[in-house]
Every structure is written in structure tokens, then in C-alpha cells.
Amino acid sequence: REQINLYGRKKMLGYSFYALQTILDPDERMVEELNLLFAQLPTRPTPNPPRTTTERLRQLVRQGSVLTFVRHQDSGVIVGTGTLMVGNDPVADHGLITSMVVDAGHRGNGIAPAILRRLVTASKRLGLMNPRLSCGPDRPAARKVYQTFGFSLIADGDHLSDGTQFFQLRPEH
Image 1 (tube, rainbow, N blue to C red):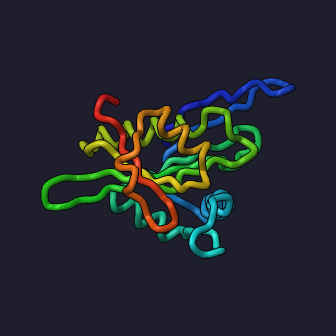
Image 2 (cartoon, one colour):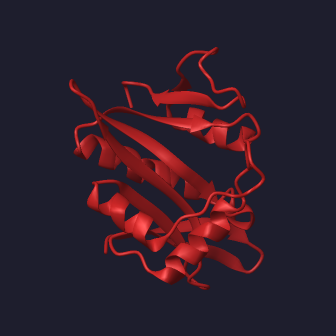
Image 3 (cartoon, one colour):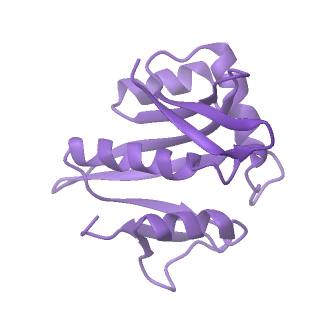
């Protein structure tokens, strides 16, 4: 299991330590912790938060998706996650970054940029062209992180009926 240590912002008693890892063999505890994170996402258009299963995660890994998560070192709890899904069409392979979420109590510690960096690196390693992601209008902090990282709005009018907009990594990144 590949692991990178992150050091969060200074707290009153010191630093928070995090480990960035890639999911290779998901288990039930991992699924429970990820579902707690997904419950923090704004729910549209239904009131039910998105959920995953162990089998769904295993299927994504088998299909070549890169599932990344961050654990808090002291508690061992997953506090952030993101997924790079690989899509194919007749002329190119594409990357779509999805399910990006960081626990509200751990935001501002560099977790989202670390996850994005890992997923963009994986995208390049897999030969995928400029990965895309989507972001709802009710997530301004996430939009800021994505834009700071090098993602730009594809087209101002290009969005779903709920206001979700699509971003693509600029070629120079």
C-alpha cells in the first residue's frame, strides 16, 4: 500500500498528521467510513446521501479506477476521499474525478489538494487527457480548491439542471 504523509495546519497542541493511501482491497470498515463522508455531500436532487458498497468499490478497482483516501493518523479514521474513473470511447481515454469530499472537521489542512494531486498524477500515468470533474453551486470552497489547482470551467452555460458545472484541468498542469 502506497502511503504519503501529510501534515495539517498547526492546532493548539501541535500538528495533525494524515496518511494519503490508495484503495486496493476495500473492506466493510472502509465502506462505513466512506459512507459517513458521502453523507456530508449536498444531496441533490434527492434527500438521500450517496452510498457505496464493498462490491462497488472492488468493481471500480477491477475496472482501473484509482480510489484514494486520507486517514487521520491518530484516530485511524478516513477523513477525505476522491476517485479517478477511467472512461473509454473510440478515439481516446478520459479521466473523471468524482466523489471528492473532506470531512468538515479536517478541511483547510491540505487534504483536498493532496488527493487531487494524487489523482491527476494517476491520470497522467494512465495517459488520460486532461481529467474533468463536476462541482455543484452549493460547494464554493471546493470550487475554489479546484480552480486554484488548475481546473477551469469548461463553459459557463455547460451545467446540469441542478446547477452542477463541469471543470477540466488546464493543459499546462
